[in-house]
Amino acid sequence: MRRYLIFAILILGFFASCKKDSGTIPDNRGLVLTKLATGINLSNWFNDYSDPAQFGTRYNSNHLQQIKNAGFTYVRLPVGPSVISNPFNLSAINSNILAQVDQAVRNIIGAGLTASIVLHSNSTALEVQLATDPISRLAFRQLWKNLATHFKQYDTTQVVFEVFNEPHIGATQGAAGIDKNWWAPFQEQIIQSIRETAPEHYIIAGAENWNNWYDLTLLKPYSAKNIIYNFHFYDPFAFTHQGADWSGPPYDLLRQIPYPGTPENMAPLVAAATTQEMKFFLQWYGTQRYNADSVRDAMRKVYNWSVTHRVPVICNEFGVYKPYTPADSRLRYLQEFRMAIDQYHFGWAVWDYDEGFGMARYPTAIRTGVPEWESGVLQALGLQ
Image (cartoon, rainbow, N blue to C red; front, top):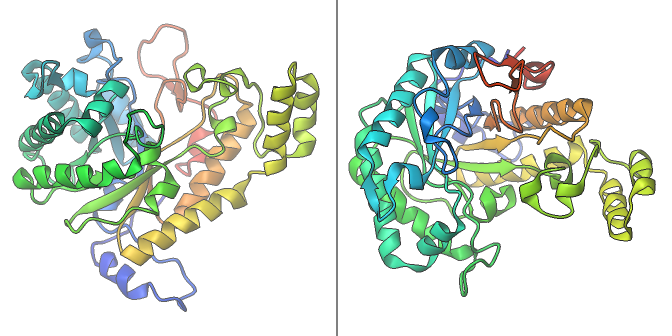
């Protein structure tokens, strides 16, 4: 199990040790990230697409205690803007839903876990509004100010705020005249709005392009204090999202893609492919030879950015969509990514608990009771 013997003084130690000739990798987490060291996403509790009938019942103290006992230190709690706010007034919070989210946060804290609250939109239309409409941006800033006003009642080690999940409208050219540069200044304004009411709580900020790790290394950190920077990691996408219908072709058609991929282990899949386009794609995946060295190289680049700017970093989403993935490849990927991220002392949160990427599985098709951890996942995550 991971050890959490990290104290606030290590922040100073990190700054002092970041010399080119040190030959070691300093710990860049500090006291707060002992709370954000090992996390798990509860992905379908209060999301835009979640069933409102289960807001108060989906996860109880038994689920949260299971998560705590496994060695996780925090829960990332996605909350849909369409769930928590008035659909006709983005800045107005639905008091009934707020009470249910607040109870969830109390239960998380009661289990000895930290709650990381993230506004997690499933609506491209909302992001277009935020990117193009000044009135919507003001309303969203007020929404966050209202949320921070409510949740600042909890200690700074118990509740953390994350601005927005995976902004991407610029990267995907989903709005005319909008590129990735729209996001950074708007995110800074949201941070300012939160700071007006919660001056000490930690805020998680990330880059455009789906919180991509590479785009994070292009972001200029903000001057505000107590900012933690996040990225998501799903490389190689052909492996982590094989068979995911929302990903579109060719990813939704992929099956039994191994990790790591090589020309040799991809040869049977190439031979069985029914279209020339799919053959080319599968051959390409094999020739990339994406492996543990590839993962470490990406983590090294993020780490160098964090050292250069002297800021803490976490990866609060990584994982593998499991219905069509070879089980041994999935475990190998989870382990190799976790080992790479641990090498650079980043906090992390796996996606997710009990859904399509889930670490736990219910014994039957009926969701009842507490799910069972899947064989090997806690070992792969370094928790056993």
